Image (cartoon, rainbow, N blue to C red; front, side, top):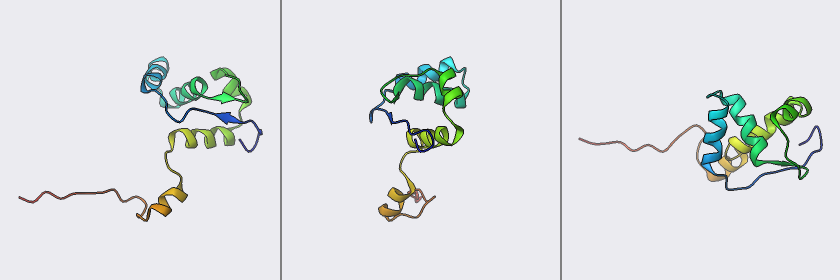
Length: 96
């Protein structure tokens, strides 16, 4: 993370059940569920942290960047390389 200099690692493959569990604990509050999920699957300099530690010690800029990396999918650079215009999904038309 650029502001704190902490190295964050998380597995490339993450179980869906972990997300469902975090969503249940957060009572369907997506913002809280995302933080709980990151705290469960990520290691901050090799250590796990709690939601309270995350809120207290991780600055908003670093938190937003981490959330975007974990939940955002492909970066804008990857989209540009794919050759498809941004915001355009693939569509198929049904003919009668």
